Image (cartoon, rainbow, N blue to C red; front, side, top):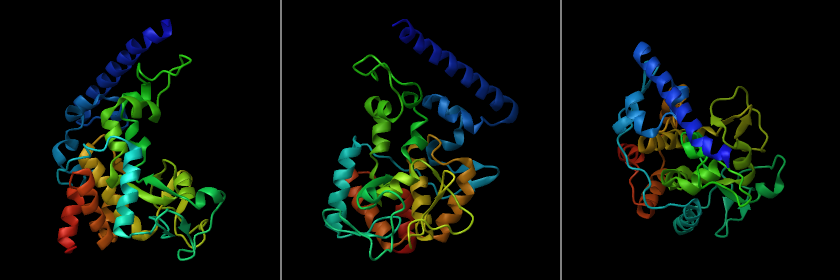
Length: 299
């Protein structure tokens, strides 16, 4: 019990030290360091990272992430499980039975058929034959910005008295994390093995063309995932939406140029636009990133 009482004081000291360090950087360099973002309380982000507020463009190393109009995030669906149920109904009603990364088909019961895509499993045949709902922006990417994920919470205690943190704690205690985790714009149907292999790895380009999933052009190596080029834009625009809707450092400065390029290389298509309209009907908030792009494309 004594150790548990000291924990809040320790966390407060760490927060004060982090804020002081960020303030020193801001004073002498004009910018707070990006690596401290996740440790600074959200209510202070507008001070240390003003470029992230109000839907303004993101800037890094003199490069602007353009086209991020202000947008609202999910405020109606509070659980990941409900999102999965709603998405299953959405895909069945739309008669869209194509998995995201590899293009494998699935039926109304979400049984996969890889004959069209040429996908072959790498190691896990069981997961390779089931559809899972993949967070394009990995939960850990935004989860680390929550104190409940990093440090735990007084309510995050197991029956044996052991404290826990991470995703389980954030899902249990943070309303905002619950809404971000459940945001349907950030969820796509994926082959389970690919979902598992991608894990929480960042998206980037990988040299060469190493193929481990048959004809599926999904590459995962050294904690980096390179998707098929016809998914570049879908992924970039999802990151843009999550950044515009929630902030919390969803887009790393090192990825700004990459996502700008991917957005241009792979414009919106009919299904991406239709899916956004269907999600809006269920979730209630308009994805203005996609709304703008779809109107410009006439879709």
